[in-house]
Length: 360
Image (cartoon, rainbow, N blue to C red; front, top):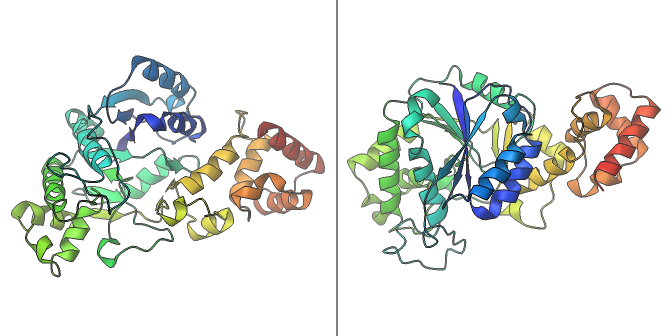
């Protein structure tokens, strides 16, 4: 089942990041149907106009992807994310727990697509800190899914970062995944998934929607409180996760854990490329900050322009993002010979000059 739609869940504070995402998103290689922008509350007309203007210069727009807006109509009391698990919440007032905002927004967003589920088939959810890292990224992803089982429900990445995860939740698939909403019993799976989450939150109010199913079936044998959640619907969701999901960790990289989000963390791009050579989309602020810095130099449309060559070269380099602008002639030459053969001294000078000017 082919991915024909992309959905980006948002809160108002992320709109500036969304516009950056649109400016630097590479071509997908697919003539898709629709990019849906799902906001937690409601859209202002001025916001829609501003975003549409930015989107008109996005590579996805040039490929024919339409832009549509979804409103989750959440209240301010519903749309919050309490990151400190020691802070309690009143589950009578906040049944979606400490992560009420993202939990509720996910289910409302996916259900907003039910009227087009047959036409869409599969939808890729990408938060604004999930970024495609190469040309034709969606075409390659669709090719990898072409031989997937027809009854697949979810395909996505496990965590690939440096933070510690409890054994019981290591199997979870990050929310930045592919959802096969056109599958005949996807709606039943979604209902059972949400029901299980709402019950689990009474035992573990910090629970997130993308973790709850593996948490349930792994903790059930050792935790009486979790065992009490057992029901026919919970077992259906559990069995679906075990048998009708697909691990795409090699292509969709979840690099957005606690460690990667600290200010002290530094990403070495060369090591990342070495560890994840098939990466198509990376979820994680540290990586995306580096990519945005690289693509800030890519203002010229011709792929052969030296600045664009440099952008590609840097992705194969062995620099930390904090020293990208401090490279010397030798470093440029070494990168150039590694990826595209020997560049002339004139080309190297042009690359350095334009890179420095564009990034001032």
